[in-house]
Amino acid sequence: MEPHDHPELISHNHEHRKAVLDRLSRIEGHVRAVKRMVEADVECPEVLVQIAAVRSALNSVGKVILEDHVKSCLIDAANEGEFEKAFKDLRNSLDKFIG
Image (tube, rainbow, N blue to C red; front, side):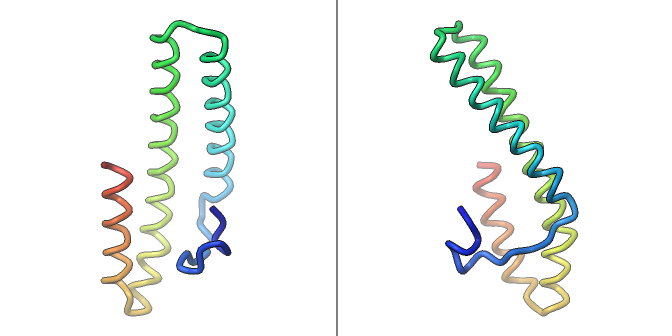
């Protein structure tokens, strides 16, 4: 999903952008490795452990994105008088992230 494909998404320059992209690349490689494990008929418990590791890595990168969002987007929204909308959007996103 690219921001230009969704006009409602506003592009922001976040402090940890490169670190997030690097982590996502590692996660992507990890997911491909899990797929190869399934293709190779590796025992299910080992596959499940690796899936748990991927889930943990995704949660970790999500926390970094959340921190960047709070530090930049919410502060910007407050300064622009748009805090209520930004907070509502954050709450909806957190419901999906946590839920």
